[in-house]
Image 1 (tube, rainbow, N blue to C red):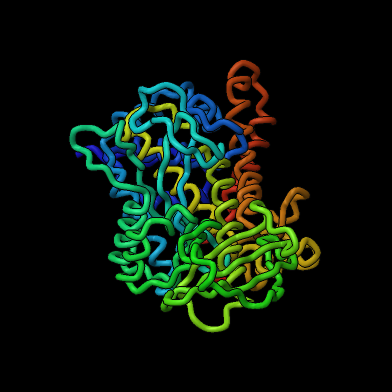
Image 2: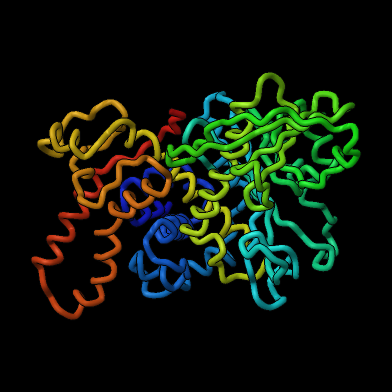
Length: 445
């Protein structure tokens, strides 16, 4: 019996994370390509093309990566289910804030599955492109991707397809997540989903709390003679970077609305412009003046951060055209995203450069509370960021993989010019980077 060879190592914290997925792949080369794509997606290259990723990981060309996306028989659904099980394990029964959103990206031509002229959120207008409905969750500070589904415009449906609206896809996602055991604290969504009675009825049937945006001309207050308004009150809107700004809030009281309540929030109640005023609907009860604005403002901050993160990892950089192949690309992006999220809190909690300098005398120094398996010496790198946000964590991890990437860039020259000391120095630095311990805990703060 031939024993399969072990997979080629990359960087230890990536290899350790990817071990959870190894059994999904039919051969060692497929597993290696999975790891290579993860490394390429978290690397600093701006465009995550297969050619660029191949250079990052030291491949001669991109053929094996392309084969992995187009021919290799691994099951994208099984990969998604495993990733979700990792999240459920680490959430450990805590309630999750669920955010429903859509992602649209401009795509030229008409050969890619489900590309059509439609509203593209990233562009803010109707354009040729592809759209997905996405759910992502928040527990404490970390955010993580859950499920994505293609939106299939009616004009692009294949014979085996059934048309489903975006709200219908969102409800499918929520039902699947609850079926897996995810506990949902509340659902946040934009006005597209509120204007669908099907979506709200579905949330009510599932007995879920929600805060959703609504349009300024919402039908609930068209009969102005019956609508009354509370006095304006102030609250502090807290942004993701902990900065605060004063906002103004009032309740719009509509007779006969039952448990549903309506709110208006603005930054200037003398001039309620479209760009500075929100309208919200919720079935949450109690005194919401100090909380409802931050519930939905939280969604805006997270949504912006999530889209920025997906752009960093190359969500729209695929160069394949079939639905199955694009699904594979998006799933690997989601796996890379989760890798970053797992590192976000444990190594940034109440730690500063000064505390690192004082306590760290060697690679074997004692770890303070909040740091998991991480020798503090890495944090002494002058570009290290201690803010604890997702993007800062990504930048820190990019520092860890830098020697591996630079060595792969230099290897073609080292094959021409024999410089043993340079190669030995790189290998020693790579060995140091491989002592960096990745977190395996989704700390909810």
